[in-house]
Image 1 (cartoon, one colour):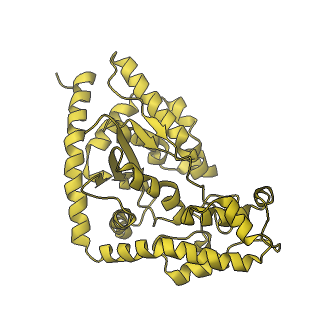
Image 2 (cartoon, one colour):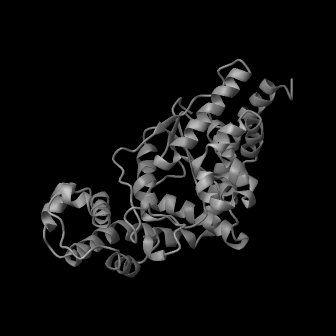
Length: 333
């Protein structure tokens, strides 16, 4: 593998929505032609919050199918299931002995997910940033695609790597750099333009899934929260109306048309007119991906073979790292 290695993990805790695709998967597809990429379907992270055991394996296949349908090439990248490479858990223990409780206490995502019930939250939910560090450092990744909500975790990864290097007096781990997609638009909920589109939102109307039918997409967009005014005529006016701005941003991201041009084209028109054009734009983006995903999911053996073969590739790299770590730490000579 070349010196520049990209690692990213996606949880199979629910289907992938339009925000995931526009914010991350489109970048993954582009990155695969520029760097060596490792993509893990991180099922061990998913179970930090209870998952239905009857659904988890199927959701892992769904993530892989959507990856492929979006344009990620299994023969060009390493795409594997995290739990099939036990070295992730092994390195997580070594790094747990390096990380500090104070560092984990500062992780805002644990506070957000645990809420007021942090005393009954799982230990895994509290310590999973260490497993995330292991995921990245196991492959000596140099770059990690991150969104705004993940910057803190990557800073922790760098802190852990730096402390390990200092503790054992050698520059073993890279300090991975964030890959921030400056062109990606943050896609918000269709029910609340101030909140990020999320699969954890209780309302299915808040998000567009990459496997939604054209009819489902149409209904969700037509029911998307807006206001009683007509379409704005300037960027400044758009910024004061979060739900409308979100819909315009979705149009921009799916069509690659300049935001100002879209605003000019629909200025002072009824919102319903804009929504009908947005439906055409979004369905033309999702329909081929949804079709290919459905076709791939009919061949579970094909998908399982990809995961199995890629896990072997990942394990070759992971075993080398774990052997080196064991020697550095001193558990083997």
